[in-house]
Image 1 (cartoon, rainbow, N blue to C red):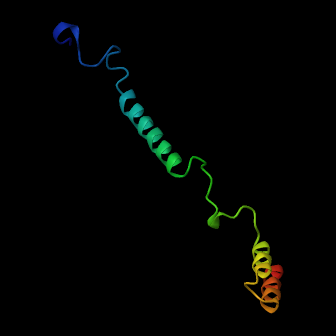
Image 2: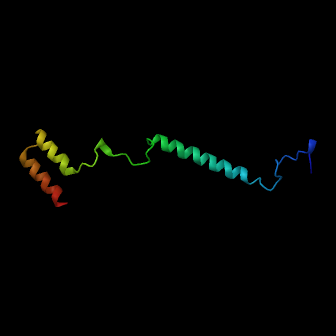
Image 3: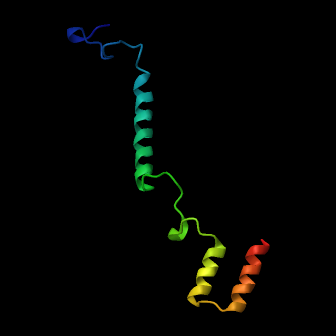
Length: 86
């Protein structure tokens, strides 16, 4: 039934497309949430590396510590043996 001035309250397509409203709302909010997550993670989507190291192995770090004098030769050899064994 038509309301005042020929408006029935359903829009230009009648009742046939009323299901699109909730679907479009879900899509809209999904896009908003995805964008927020993307921005919070730094825009890369990648897992952040711990400690800011790029491609360094445990052996590389151990060798650097030995070179800086943080550990002695005995400790270096023990830890190197543990790392190479695994």
